Length: 394
Image 1 (cartoon, rainbow, N blue to C red):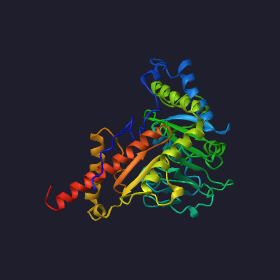
Image 2: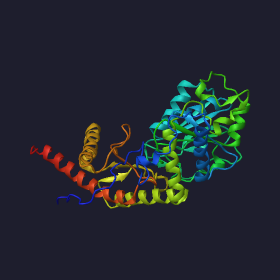
Image 3: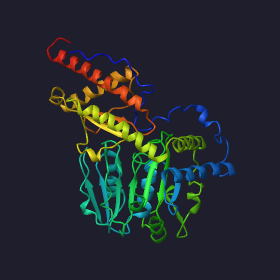
Image 4: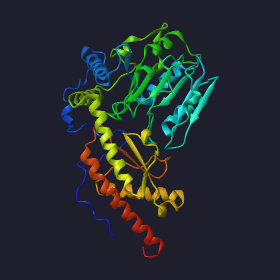
């Protein structure tokens, strides 16, 4: 039976996992008040950056005694800044279950001279066993696996009375999933993920315990300028008041301010959570009714509601060599890109063949509903072509 060509297209075909789509209704006019051509150290420049910090605190409901800073080099810079300035004082555990978390494993194993390191890893679609962590160690982990579609659903493994600090890469979880601030000492993320901002700016949120670590511990290795958070044994407070380490883009800051204001006016943090949950659930319900596709994460509770990762399980496809399976999935991605229906939604290159649809709170639910029939259609087209080649009728 031929799968009919869908009649409805998503109004916005952008399902990229980063940079993600802008908030609904965004136009360049949103940047008209940007402090262009002004120093970031001018009164206006610092006021804009301070407004980013203050709105971030309000929207994310960050505790009053946590510091919020804008740092260089996106989420990567923020995580590495935390690792290089805070680790080494006690044993370290680094947990990873997908590509980006694995980057922190590489830093810890190959770059930082850590004397006591344990790594906890898991395959795509699964979480590692956190039982080795008892609170006496420092812990580095991701809240949400951007390329695996797996999130930390329960932070109960982190003791409130821990001695070590926790460094949480939350770049694809923040604004979409609840963050238990009392269990997190360093939270990092970037503007270009859930909030659809432009790249290269990172956010670092520090608990009082993280500040204490910075002020009481000096790592034995040299630190480049962009990593230095203290001076004379004290936190550089200006970084957390709008005075950045290096020159930020005030155009990007204006864009992020626009996103924060939109969230605040449209249901706030809970509204973002609810929209992401609804979008993801729509995909999961669709998957449950089909036998050719499945969730990469098999545990319902741990599935990500931002980067929904799917794998092709049709036996005709899975019988192929892995490279051919990947080519089949890429063919679907290319077909829908040519149709202008869905862009940049292929699985990460090291993940199992399939798709990654970014559906956080800025994504309109109607677009999620509209793209799914197109996936069915493209799959049917690919299968028909595959079978024709196998029978020599291509």
